[in-house]
Amino acid sequence: MESFYRTHRYLIEHTDAPIRRGLMDEINWNDRLIGIKGTRGVGKTTFLLQYAKEKFGTDRSCLYLNMNNLYFSQHRLADFAEKFVKDGGRVLLIDQVFKYDGWSHELRECYDNYPELRIVFTGSSVMRLNEENPELDGITKVYYLRGLSFREYLNLKSGNHFKAYTLEEILKNHREIAQNILKDVHPMSHFQDYLHHGFYPFFLEKRNFSENLLKTMNMMIEVDILLIKQIEQKYLSKIKKLLYLLAVDGPGAPNVSQLATEIQTSRATVMNYIKYLADSRLINMVYPKGEEFPKKPAKLMMHNSNLMYAVYPVKVNQQDVLDTFFMNTMYKDHKLYMGDKGSSFLVDEGLRFRVCPENCKIKNNPEVYYAMHRKELGEGNLIPLWLFGFLY
Image 1 (cartoon, rainbow, N blue to C red):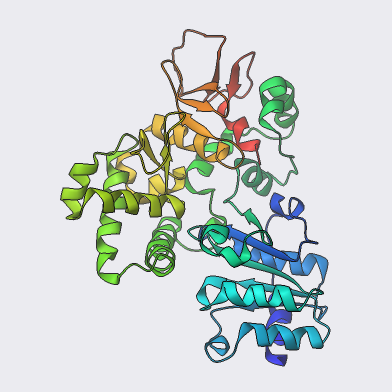
Image 2: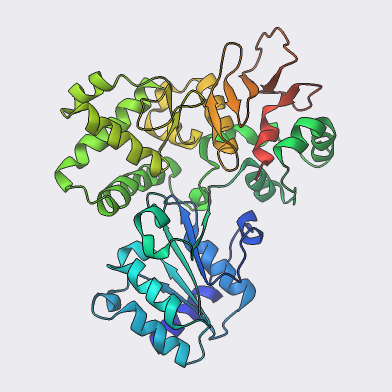
């Protein structure tokens, strides 16, 4: 036990998160069982340690565990929790919980046996926590940690503390909001850098970002998809090839028959692989309103623009990048559907948006909101595209 406390103390003392994530204030930390999902590379470990440092410091009532620790190959997590509680422990922070066999059953055991214990655990975005683990349904509060928003990136790069806005606030007051931001910084001077490398916090590391992102993407497929979905290793190359083909083709409706031929598998398997890639937050599926998986999506897009530059940088189209940014930033709290004539997307109950690149010619339709690239200040239904990066 002491070795875990020493590790915890060292990690807390050496954790210096570059930015405080907005999710920190959205979580009800009094809940007894909290699951934090997120794709690889968005900073889940740092988030847990930041919480521990902020709320507990090196107080022994809180303890961070990583399920990569070989100790848990021979010892039960529930037994460890029992000893922790007897020693006065109150909060367990369990990282990469899916690496531990039988994790959901033992979390339920801890929940039932130790009412004074609170557990916060992280898992992959591929995990369907309540659907695939019925013993946790109804007792687990699940949150999703995303990559950096443009707002968070801008705060980090400029030293400001701009707040997030709701979509309703942006649509109604975008000019006033933008004017206040422009007093302190010119967002457009940072926007292209964000599109290229700002979504994943590890851009701060002194390593080649694109190589690091490619490595992370491979880990998403090799570990998150194969391990959690229990897919045999021999199918790994097919999933990787499928992702590459989708990236090269660019946003559009997938030709499932052709893809099945190219990776030598069935149409049904291609659709399953597409769903796994979407669950891992490597791609997004866009449907007409009223349709959903397992139907074929009307459009496939990369999950965020950073992925586009990493996978196939020689074929990065500005319109595709901007569409991807808009969808990604809306994805947190809103439903997006395929747009109708004259719009790029339908949002929620039918708000129509068109994403417009630089020098875009439009016939202004008052029933459409235009997200304008290269526009620092908007007017009416013409709204700066960058401002939608302030939704979280």
